[in-house]
Image (cartoon, rainbow, N blue to C red; front, side, top):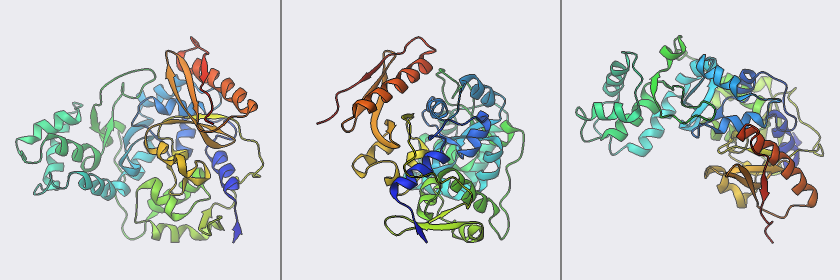
Length: 365
């Protein structure tokens, strides 16, 4: 197997993630290609798409949410993802067992003795009237039947695992604050969720190929880290004849699509601002291709990060309309200039052109 350097993997990731060059693609196509965007922080996908899609207009994403072409729902890693309606319907059943296991890992003691099938039936019955409800409303309504469990555990088990639901707009619309209301996913999208197949795992195989298109070359451990699914060996085996293999600097086997982009490692990489919990960082078990081990904790702490030469080099926040950048290591003069230029563009995007201010803190010594 040919070996790929960490820098080669970095450039491949940037190319697949539309971070090497902004893509001239429709927003719906970008969401599909990226296999969704993590979005427990509702405004973050707008920054993620702004950094990836040329001339991105937030109103387009709003329209897709309102028209139900994209949806916010629990999927990979039991986190809220913004995905296409087609992917939500196709992928949800394949994630059911993982979602249930992950909620039980948190609330096993509270849910001890609760028949989860009965809980699911009770939740579906409540939502059958078409009235959207919050998680706390569902939990409180069922707490009389299962008082020992408590509303929080009951509500979270329902909306994160047992009953496929969508988070409804205005939650997730541009520059809009709104509480979380849930409705059954199939009813919201007007189509039934695809049932589990018997025997083979076509959805798992499709996930393998889609993941590699957006994140490859990657190891099977990276695929598991992105999806949260442990049971994909059969899917990988079924897809293997369509794939090629490399190894990384540690000797791990990396799988990839034969014709996917793998740019020259010396390809210049522009500055890019990433939102909190961006999958370009989180979508791997070994994140060394994009973030140093010393800063790995930033990727799970909700810090927004800046890529310089393709790697996490700073964090950023917004303060009174100004984008504030905190370097993680010393910037060159050229780095500082490029970060400032991209920061001004981001400030304008976030403020509707009311601000172009950026502040870059002193580099650490």
